[in-house]
Length: 462
Image 1: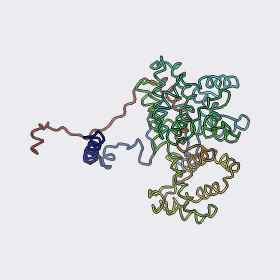
Image 2: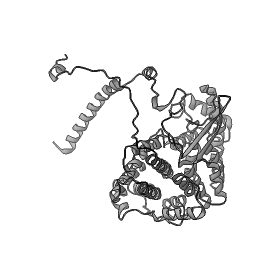
Image 3: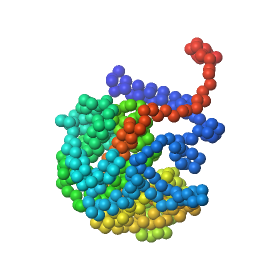
Image 4: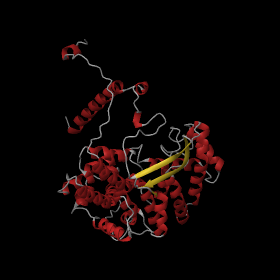
């Protein structure tokens, strides 16, 4: 028998086995919802109203979505603070200084806003760290390239541990060094991973531009991505704002909590960040802006006039009624697990989106986004009877920004990681400094003791 024929037979055998036993898994692993209520278990670490169960303390960031008046919880415009500073105030600094991502990174890592000399030194160190080991691009990134750039980056992160003689040193000094190195090389891992994939899978030219240590991370991302290394000041500024807004969002988001869980186990920095990457790439977490952009593709193919509010509303109603798009009844980019009246990140980003849309002659697309933003909350309230307040979140516009910047969709989630590595690093450091306890939540076992059945008895159906 030929090897190919034998392989086909084996694959069919494996498929048949898996298909049959998947049903058994579903039967034996299913736990009915009422049991969660019976034992007071908060499914997904969420309470009955969807709020996260309190599992830790942090000084790194805070999120506000409600005010309390006379003991009553009242929805308010959202607020996001980095170490106590409103992100909107941090971004105002971009009116004086073009790029603020590094300043916010310093704040999250060290807890204080840097002075001019401190920031200059910090940026200088990040610049010096923008390098990979000799032949790393050839031997690691260009080997087995994948459309899934998050997986490619995770493989690279774990491989970098092999080049670190102090990999397992958990002193704050060493972990800080490792964290800053990863912050510096993340743009390289993402962009080079994409170029390798694009070259080998799409037969396109491959570009490996060295980063320029004298410019910002946002500028370097665009510089390394584009064949001609060119970008406008507005393009780099808008990307810088996007990175700042995505770098941190409380300790309870899935990837940050993952970072803290594996950090508490005493693992090394590379393994902790690889675990966070695996969390972020999940469709329910880091891929939200990609879901929005795919939905927008569908809306554009079914709406003739982007400026016609009635036509846009009619199609959105079809989506909500599961009569259009993916049949899930969701308008992606609308609503947030924490915010109610508004997502402060979206409100900040929108003004920059409008400015960029003018530069890119994308006025019609901007009109469509505006009409959806206006109509969706009203339609959701009518169709879902949700009146607590539904507003666009940051993902509603971030995909549009990346599209206008010419960033390939394969890099949308990796770009999220380029920003969030700062927040993960800050939380890892805080976890190491403040606690020596391994995070170990309890699970109520529903299994009951059974008598062992011999093989013969099982075969005889006893």
